[in-house]
Length: 172
Image (cartoon, rainbow, N blue to C red; front, side, top):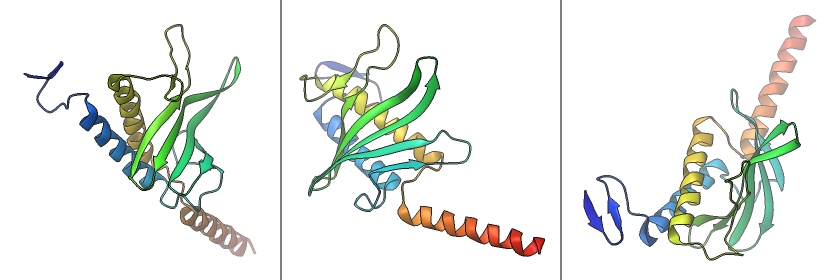
């Protein structure tokens, strides 16, 4: 173990400092581009359905020349009604090729806390933690086959049409 600034760093684990945070922003951008290959072509609200996984909901909140703001979440039905979790808002900076969490809902439980970068000046540690969660979650979604690709949706629709036509031809 070595000492790096204010934190002890174990071998293979980066310190939670500004360079590590910027690296997370870059990784998040790369994974978002894998999840949403054509950000400009994706509808404002879309659902990714992958076999054996929860449906992933995407809402494009804002499209600008150099940025896109997205809301990603799963939807759950609970006793209190409709619940969004993890309920994260991400801003993609296309010119810098980075993406950061700009807000996260409070979640459930007494100790649940929200995250809103525009209303609080969070320390690097807090930003690192919430963006590290996003990085892990995006990897999880990609491993389970989620994608928001208009081309993939068209391909899936074409396959479904072919399957329907084949079944109808067998029945007649």
